[in-house]
Amino acid sequence: MHVHLVFVTKFRHKVFTDAHLTRMEEIMRSVCADFECELAEFNGEDNHVHLLVNFPPKV
Image (cartoon, rainbow, N blue to C red; front, side):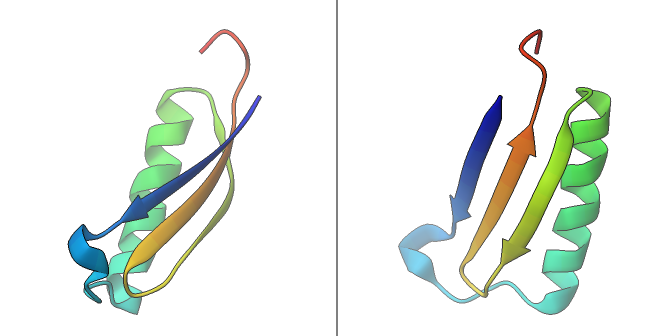
């Protein structure tokens, strides 16, 4: 199964820097590994983040 998640800041304020995005990707990869999922794609801008997660149906 594939899931596309989008996290958006309140009122689309521009708050994410490159350091934030890098750290968020590390955290999301760690969470996916804990759930036996695969973070297929991660990207973001200064006011939102996109994740494409592949996971087995058992999750």
